[in-house]
Length: 282
Image 1 (tube, helix red, strand yellow):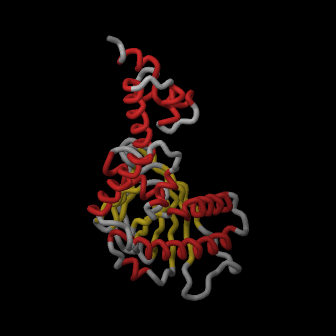
Image 2 (cartoon, rainbow, N blue to C red):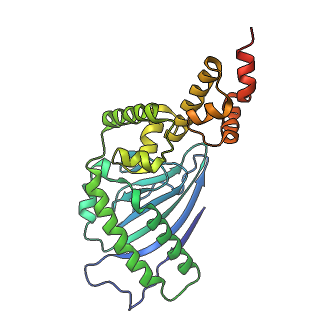
Image 3 (tube, rainbow, N blue to C red):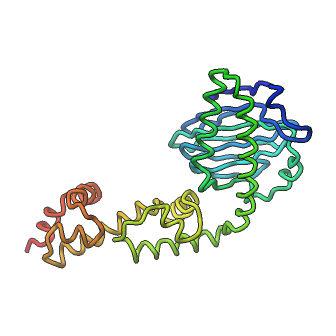
């Protein structure tokens, strides 16, 4: 499903000669491995997409990219591309077409690791910008062209900054090493109440990349892995110590024993008390 909006021309919002202009905006959804559109290209138009829900597979000029929420993808002009949802979930993305962009030739020469960017700290701003613009375009509000022009300038500035940072993104081997370092950090600090943002900051990366790298290597998100480590340790303490449930919950990182019991029961299948009784039985 694709909702497409043309950006009206407006003399007050017309860019200066040589400046880019947003020509259209789409809000698209696909699921179950379906493609948003057939393989295609655009003459003298570059596109920028922002994935805000689900995961996708994107083909750009023969290269394959796997997206997570918060990813930005850049499509050079005259290059074949296609966007598909992951096989088992729904993907949603905003996409805008741009004409008159001076960096078209530069985007043609982008190395593969610079065509997918992690928006990181800019994710909320970009998503809200697209949503507000869609709202104005849907309502045919007079300020929509001016808003589109201002948002485009901000978006291109953000992309320029992220491209500079993308040079520091590790290779596949480096990503595996980074994931292992994160795993070791979680193993040593699983009882602490850090968030995904805190973990990403610890390793000087953004939260989306941290989750993507860890999941690729270990099959679960960093926070899911921490939960599993907590419950593993709780199982050990329940059978090797006589500490009560509240004490064991606090040792593995849960201030609320009821929350601990809920998580334990969901992962193990029985309550902590029943688990202890069954495993201490002669």
